[in-house]
Image (cartoon, rainbow, N blue to C red; front, side, top):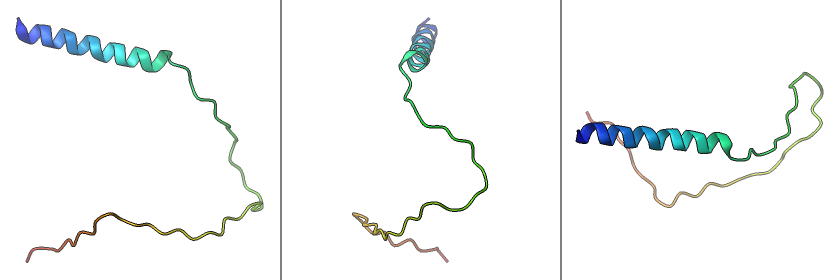
Length: 61
């Protein structure tokens, strides 16, 4: 009986989660078909990534 109750509650939560995802407002996006053509814009910037910790990973022999 307890397993069935947990399964029903879990299924109800999953259905509610999916319904909430489908009923919430969507985010508008710009959609353009990809095609061939000349490059109209260039990005020329340098970036630097800083990691908080560095890990040394070695292979065991």
